[in-house]
Image 1 (cartoon, rainbow, N blue to C red):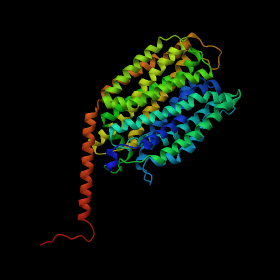
Image 2: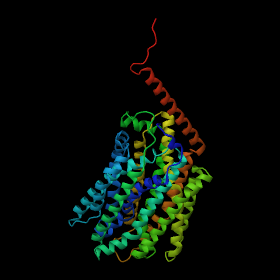
Image 3: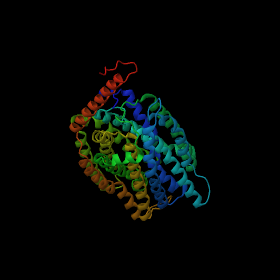
Image 4: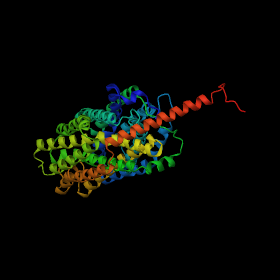
Length: 476
């Protein structure tokens, strides 16, 4: 696999922070889409919830084509910076511009507004694909040590939590301050500021992270062959289900959070920021302790246990009355702690599945593999965004109203509690089916390193035999 001795030891803290900064940069835009775009479209731009759900879902059909293509392009990229890092250098600037345009509200007819929302959301999604698939693939090539991967992913999601903290603690207050009563202007200026911060984060990631794991074979098969090879890997298919379900339950809660805080708990802008921020802090705490737990037990056991705890906490929140704001905030913190524990493990599973596939087939297609995972993550986002929009519409939610009906309030509570609980239960089952434990991953890693050593030895022997000017055996 072209590994150096550095892979077999620890990665420096600076590089782990740098790796995490890449996803922090991603989430300065992506978290805003997850948490605020639905609200922005319905309550600021004036689009119906059903249309918003349709916009979110429609882009996933495009992603089904563009994600694997982007993965294949990243796998075949050759530069002095590696295969995946160049995309972190060149794409963030247009992504930032697209994000600001997405939170811009030009005047026009309802049809024009819908068309503008669709086009700007589509452009942002495509650019996000172009930077995030290479970034996610980067997590599979910084090291071959599956335990260090959990540590890298833990740092990643702690720093994602930092991005969420910046957004959630400042976004709505900044919208009010910049907008001075005009939320549309406030959102536009605030997102411009967030995107500038994101550019610095991407730059730090590019400057500090290195690619070390190289495929045993050259990636020269074609996209269809890559996909066929991946589809034959049962562990990759199982990881896709984990990715989808984890994203689905998370984005359901994130998409419903602002509605829950506003209409069920009755909080204002400052209260909403504090409520959502408390959940982010819980998530950061969970990701921070995840490596500690996986040192005491296996990744698989910790993932299953944290997923079961997540189910129980979501069900408990359903029974918390809206007047009990502090109790609701405490349960939300627990929910996010349990989610945070499982998140870096799930992303480590992705690289484990790729190692398993290379061990079985001899081919490593990191970009296409992570493209599939990112597509299922975005599918989970779309399904969550669509479900939030459709169920709010079904419940009679009215954007910008002074009060909501009991049916609408019930829908909001279900979207924030019991529906995520059901999805998390399915995620627990998917984790159990994945079944790759640490002992087997150690064996696979040793075997892959041995194969890489054998190939390297054969190449050196072949080079000596065919070196110009080398002595040739006598022929009688």
